[in-house]
Amino acid sequence: MRYLICAWLFVAYAGAAIAVDRPDDFAYGSTLEADGSEALYEITLPATVYRGAARPDLGDVRVFNGAGEVVPHAWRPRKTASAEAPALATLTLFPLKATAGTPVDGLAISVHRSAGGTTRVDVASSDARERTGKRVIGYLVDLTALDRALRAIEFDWPMTSDGFAGKLRVDASDDLAAWRTLVAGAPLISIEVAGQRLQQKRVELPLQKTRYLRLSWAGQSADQPPPELASAHGELAEKSIEAPREWTQIEAGKGEKPGEYVFDLHSHYPIDRVRLDLPESNTIVQVELLAREKTDLPWRAVTRGVAYRLRQAGGEITSPEFAVGVTADRYWQLRVDQQGGGVGAGAPKMQVGWVPHRLVFAARGAPPFQLVYGNSQAKPASYAIETMIPGYRDESGAQIRSTKAGSQQTVSVRNAQALAQQELGGEVRRHDAVDWKRLSLWAALIFGVLILGAMAWRLARQIDTRNDVPSSQDTDPKSAASAARGETSQQ
Image (cartoon, rainbow, N blue to C red):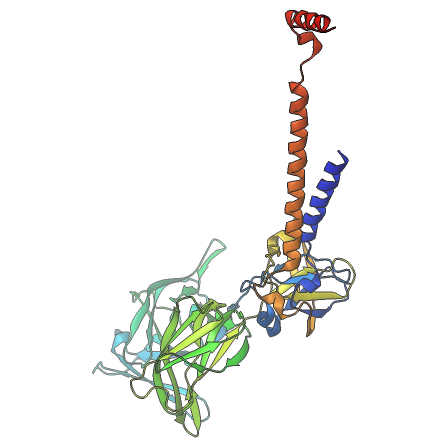
């Protein structure tokens, strides 16, 4: 029994040794500037982590405290862009005047802008009748100064005793010649009955960027002339703001065929933008980008498009960034269409951009805290952010909102800066080399199991042997008498 207990303890010790991570099990690490005065800290991963990590999914990243213990960590959701809140813009209404009965479609409108920034609108009618008794039949709205489309317009006009109810037509144009209808008849109402006021002064617009709007009344009767609009405020559409990105430049190597260039990133950046720097000016080429994680895998098409570098007015115009989704592949290939001479002399360069991950960890234990990475044998150990912080709500500020039963609470999150990278276990930890320590522990575990099996087999044999020995009560009487006579005759 004593041997059995020792074997079980040996097996338990070996299993525990396998499961525990230590800082020197990882290739590299960085000390964190976190004093432990707050519960949660956040790290924006530096580029060195992507170059030193062994797994594309960053599953080999850990945070240790001063006692060499792993502390809980989670990843914040990565956002490559955010939406700017809708804003209001004051719109100038230029009245369009014509004789009664003149359709707004029959007006020729021109806009003149002076050097001082003032705008003048001229209106000419195709109606050959006497142009007397002109009145406002519509309005022109100049949107050229706005950088985004309108979602809606809020109008206002003087309140009258009879009130007003009508329909507004909204047309759009980019050249003041060709018009297209955005809203055929949006209701505008301002009526007061028995001290109760009913108002509808907002017109929703389809989300289209345009330079000019033309407003007119749809199906308005002569008995109820429309009011003159006093003001208009436009609600701008949400604006997408690109998140700040880290960039690094990669030199090209020659591929197997003319016009092919290969790039080895030596890392697993979460790339979502690519820039191409062409070697010569006045170059326009069709390109295709491909990627793969390992050299023995086939190339995977990522995107294709046109790259250019053109001289203009003493400067240069270059092609915009290529959006490539999000990929952490290490090897990239650029294929350039050779029609037109390709890129000319020299080789193109590639810049890759990514939005860094943000890691949140719990400052359990004493500092200094250490961020470690680079272990090909490590398994993912991060929590889901909702598990680590129940009721998590992502916000751009330095606070995380969480919820519990019946209440909400905010938890302050302090930024932690990663210092210079330090070598721990060395580069060998990043590669799929033989891990002798882990193998020896597994061997010890298997040896302990074999010992337990042998002891169990031996114990079973002993029990079976005892069961096979006959007892005196089971002896046959005749056989016993014969044995007694045989002993007497021998004497």
